View (cartoon, helix red, strand yellow):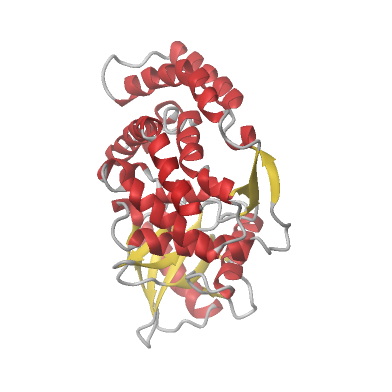
Length: 346
């Protein structure tokens, strides 16, 4: 269907199945895999409409929306889901499958990095989120081996496979593809040193139900407050330290604020601990080491020129280079960051 006909279908779905009347529908901010729309009803209420791609796992998407509802019920700022007239989270009609949530106005994503009071606000919000989801019926928190959180052996296999693919299709000597191939080689060569760094992690870390994709595009800010946490993944156990580090040590924050990210990290961890005193201090002390290890073991986006050339845009290129550079900065200042956290966690 064309974009115009999709808008008409969305408007019809909202009227018939959501009782959102006289809906004016326009295309909204682009999603990674979804087409998004913004609708306005006759009372000037605004709604965010997500249209899922064909073949998407609708049961998993329903579970993700329900996880967000559980977090919202615990006081985490998550946009309310608008259910259909029959109580469904997602509806399929006219060739589209859509969900509808409150529209979050006057907010920006955290992609610009954290600063000022945002450190405290984000740490506190993630702490409340993790404390709430630790009680999720899928299962309580449990210890997992630290080597599973940052899996060096798996990273080595994936990098070797990627380098074999690059050898079969050599990139031109300049450009992002060449940088990806060179960086994959550098990452593979650095893995023994990465493994030595990760040996200093505790034997186990705490895994629990988490958001699952708490990256900067999925955290909306308004001034120095968190406006909304969006785009949950289905319930799954992952390291709480990994998820906290992923958002507060986003590469753009680390690189954009070279003199501020360590004290900012301390503020975020302090606010997190006040909101969620149940997570062990060992996990919180591990946040920067896990963040550095995760970046060092990741192959994203080094395979994108091979897997999905259309996805290679200037913003993706910039983000890929930032991830690689930020990993180096985190390793270089790891001792300093951990010493500051020890003071916070005493």
